[in-house]
Length: 351
Image (cartoon, rainbow, N blue to C red; front, side, top):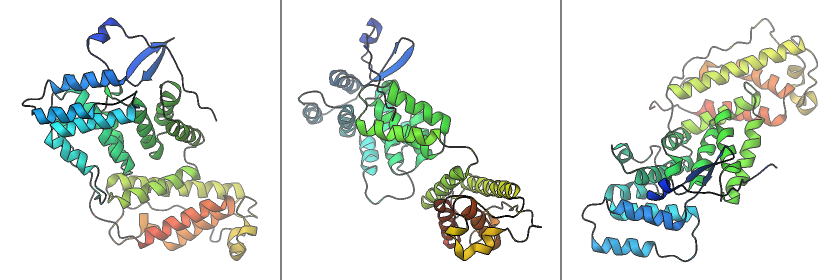
């Protein structure tokens, strides 16, 4: 596996020394490198932020002082936890958001984070709280919402740039954003210092996965199926979900046409997962019956209680037969399981 963590000498200019920065972005030999700030720099930024807080109670200040007593050099993740804990001690709405992100029994709706939309927020406060919230949404598999929050976060203001880049890459990977995901992963693994080994290992796996992803392939379609399942599990059934489902139908239809064209409308089916793996469907695998049918599927919108995408049993059976004949077994099982679950589901009406 190719996993390189670039190390460079970082020199801060005098202008930067006036206001301690967090995630230091320095260009070395024309390459921007990110590095987490030291504990001393983070503590100084905390103190600077506290000067903007009105009516800070002495007992709260004592709690904060105790929170920032430590030995050695805490890792960036621990520093982020202390920063968020400091915000929670000082600001009641922030405490409410942080506690909501810790609930075990969660709803399909993310916690209310309107406080992050306020104007003139302190950059140190806003960006680190956005990182905390975006990480939570990603862990909840709310990748669209998580990515939107992280996209609105300045990496040079966060305490833990590696966590920021890792969870942003996770969102992009799950949403099949190949180019953007590879750029984020490259920044994380090659141009960020102090990346935890678990981040770099998973990021390398995501990199290889995205590099092998081909547009309009059955692999991409099966991932979109999983993504639709995820969205519906979260109560998402609006136009975005229906658009993805239409893309799945169109993609399957295009694959079927290619298979039929390659086999000349019939034939022995010599691909993986062919007749020897499906003896019960030998007659169906050897040729496609009813070749006068064009094989197209009308991608209709979902209706409550209706069939998924307007695809009837005959069309679904035909797709499974062709995929089972020309593709590995696990693709056929994935398609069967997806249609089975879709047939059972009553799609919610909320967006």
